Image (cartoon, rainbow, N blue to C red; front, side, top):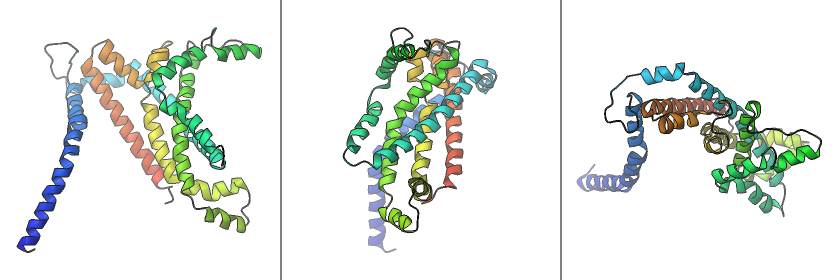
Length: 297
């Protein structure tokens, strides 16, 4: 490369670095630095407000996997994810297919289903608390009008976590619907016309042979994002059940909150957070690899 060409390449390189340096600095300060502090705290016995602290190595992680409370919260989180992910993805796809076929009222339904996404979950959790109240709530009033008994949705161990899962599905439904609508809009109409000429006249056949295969990239993205959001369940638990009754709705992030900000065991809470992040990373990677093999681009 000649002198002027080499100089031009250096100018372009330095200009590019100057443009990306603010973003890199922001990423360093907001992501990498807190992660480094978290990893450092996870191998100490630091307690909030303590003056002295010492390293304990992997003792916090060993304690986590032998702690019955942690194992219970992990099981509750997995159960919540197993309920929310199929419900939010399946219903989101179903509603998107139904709304996509409408012309005049499509915008109305999009707004109605997307409203829970725009609302504050803490405020909506308070509203759900009233709706599900055993005596004052309209849900139990409706059940009584049908001759059924009252259901303690939030105070019965067998009902608390499934109830929170239903609220989680309600909250994610609109966002997944919009993503699936975008995927449906990208499918060429010529394919449906060609399939109809070939004898594929049933709506179910068209969905299975055209819509579903071409929606697999969108479905993969929706599955991964829904899974991550489901794993991060905290707001509704903190407002509606506080981990009860009898720990039946205590999930991973709420356990981290209790250890760190109620019991002040910040070192142990940091270790739980590292385990939580590692679990999400592995789960998302495995999910993406499995779905990638079945994706049609």
